[in-house]
Image (cartoon, rainbow, N blue to C red; front, side, top):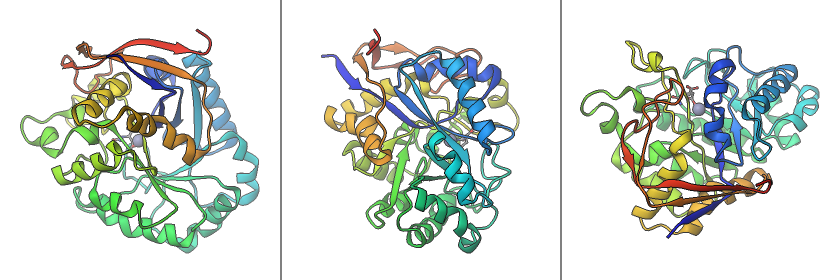
Length: 340
Ligand code: NCD
Ligand code: ZN
């Protein structure tokens, strides 16, 4: 029986810029109604002019009025309320990166001195601008996210009216925080629901599965699955689809990021099916929860999938996707927009 998904949203997406943007934008805009666009360009998107210009370039590359890019600004502790009020209508959230923790995050926050961050975060709280956070310390790679839990707790308690989204969570420790603080939410990727560190490095090293945060233990994946498959109201799908050129992945010094945009919906359909989770929960995880959390109303788009094998292409314009050349169980059969 075909499966339909309404108005899918990708609440964490890297669309890049220039040639790469043009090469991969349609992989998201064809099948999603909207996406939260990450600001980690070089240089990062941290001014109103840069943000508006970037949005225009995205609209040009997607050329599809059934896809909404929800823009984010790269967090700087120096943002004041006047500036934030002036940009509020252009953005959906602000993304905070610890300095140097992942691709193009060098201009992020060093040290987590809550008092130093207070003016900007209080202004965001007053203006009701959500804060998205890449939650990793620079500790031992497997412990980075768990070590960040205390920072999430400090932020959540210090700014109780600020919506804080723990981006691409990979650990049980992050899942446990969801029910502890009313203002903490999370995005979860499809790859972290499917793989563990074993898939990345347990056999031959798999550069196309290497990302930040790195995939963790089976018990962490189980904890993620539990909240995603039951559509816990505080979790949303965010692919963290992060394309890099093939040469940058298949290299000595592999760039972090998994490219999943073109197969995300098919893989989610397969996972919810094999795990006996309901279609209703899939719908909530992939759209309803995000609409409620962010208060957004994207354009309708109905995706019909069917259980027919799909052979994942070897690359999309020079970018190798997850599961390249492998067969996955679901295919996209039809895409209906309100225009079509
Ligand atoms: C992302 C990228 O390449 O921009 N990489 C990744 O491994 N996820 C950045 C990020 O979200 O950490
Ligand atoms: Zn990301």
